[in-house]
Structures are given as structure tokens and as C-alpha cells.
Length: 377
Image 1 (cartoon, helix red, strand yellow):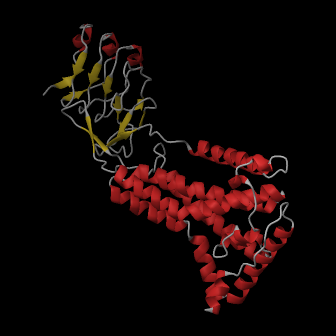
Image 2 (tube, one colour):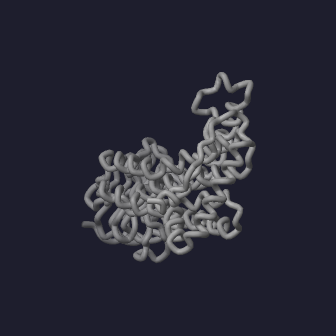
Image 3 (spheres, one colour):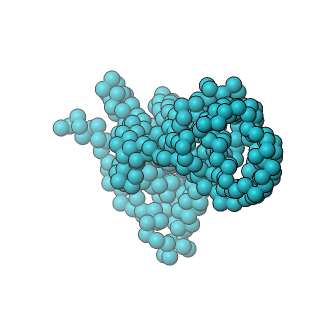
């Protein structure tokens, strides 16, 4: 085990390709002369007591494959480094949270892995779409789908359209009277407010979980799944979640979210046909919240799930939030049954009116509220 400062003479040996100084008691700062090692492919100074900053001169080295500085007390802003063969463990430093052992935070945007003061490490650039990209993709896809539905129902194009794109559904069958989402089609201001509050609460909760799954924020829920050992340049992973957990995850999310997604698509299709702003808006919100629930469940599991059972547990907790609209109607019907039935009848009547305005003929079958059916039985 070596101790003291790093001897400067080492860096005069410009033919050095591999420099392993990890797991010692080296102190002081990292010499700027490290840039003299033009042929170096591997430099590891992890698990020491080094302070100061990582020299910017390291950016001049063009043959690097591994650069490790974790488990030190290095702070400041780490330099951008180009790697000959970039891998997950190519560039590791103490840029993770918590960082209570560092005198000041270390910023490293180009690091491939960040370690924290608990000797835990994680991929610093998880391969997931940003929240901004997801939001833009949702809006753009909504507009594209709406245009496709509109064109498919034009008389000139109706004969060549796929049957699934053509609108021939009764509007009374494209909403769920057990969900507060249908309140948007009522004529009651209180029902509309309850709709907005329920929708807003669901979106807010999903956004809280979505934000907690962002690796880059300070108080993230992201679990560190790697440990980079002091006697090796490799890192071991403690995450055992695999395809046998992800398959049930996608089956469960499809079963939970499938109805809302299909109702949203049917409302978009009907709204495009009738040029009905209300249906287009309600369809968009259903479409948006369904995709938000799916993306939140996926991202949060990517951040936290270490075992297959975690995948299923986390998704069930998050999908429970997606049922708040149904729980609200159940609560209202138990406290204000007459008012709730009146609102649901308003929705049914309004949808029946839309059926009479439909561009193409269809058979309108009276739809009885599920709550009325319950009372009758």
C-alpha cells in the first residue's frame, strides 16, 4: 500500500499504457503532468484520499479506455474526456448523491458512472426519453391520430380506409359511466369541477413519481445498482430484475390501462368525425393520462426495481392512482346517489344528442347506466 503524494516522476514515463494506483492511501491533488501519458489506455486512482480537482489536461489524452477517480475527495467540475472505446465503466467519479464525504459537490457531465458516498454507483446517463420529449411526442402523436381519423371518415376516402379507422360507433358506448372522466360531458358546473380536480390530482401524482425517477435531480428516488470494487477496474451489478418480471409488468399495465386508452381513441375518432371539440378534448386527456401512467410506471421501475417482485409491486401502486376517477364516482354515488344519477343521465342524454348529429348512419341503442343496473338488481 502506497501513501503520500503521487510521485511526479511517474508521469515522465510517457510509454506507460496502464497506470493502476487504486486502493492506496495517496493524498494531495492529481498532478497536471498526468497529461504526459500520451499512450495511456487505463488510469485508475480510485479508493485513495486525493483532493482538489480532476485536471482539465486529461482531455488531451486520446487513447483512454478507462478513467477512474471514485472514492476520493475530488470536487469541482470534471473535464470532458474522449474515449477510444466507451463502455459503462469508462469514466467513473464521485458525482452521485449523497455526497456527504466530499468537501464540495463534484460535477461530471461526461462521466459514464457516478458513485456516491455510500460506495454505490449507477449509470449516469440512463437510456430513457426525457420528460420533454415524452410530452412533445404525446401532443404530436395526438394530432397525427386525429388527422388520420378525420381523413378516414371523409366520404371520398371512406371506401379505401381500414375499417378500424372508420367511425360507426354509438357515442353512448365510447365513455365509461363508472368513471369521473364522463363528467366532462355533463351540463353541471360542479360535475365539471370534480372532473378537473380528479384529472388534475392524477396528473400531479404521476408527475411527482415521474420527477422522482429522474437521475440528475438532487433528491431522486433512483437506486444505485452497481458497486465498483477497490481491487478491480470492473463493477458488479446488484439488479436482478429481468424479462420474467417485465413481461408481467406489461401484461398488468395493458389490462389496467387498456380500457381508458381504447375509450380515448374512440372519443378521438368520434370527435374527428363530428368535428366535436368536447370529444376531441376529452379524448386527448384520456390519451394523455393513459400514456402518462404507462411512462411513469416504466420509468419509476427503471429507477427503483431491483427484483422482479419490485416491478410488479411498484406498478400496482402506481396504477392504483389511475383508478381514482372510478373511486370518486363510487364515493359520490354512496353519498349523493340522486345527484350522481342525474349527472350520469345528463351525460347519456348529451351523448344521444351527438348520435343524431353523426355523419354516417348507425343504430342507436339506449344505454343504461351501470349504477341504475345495480339499483335495479
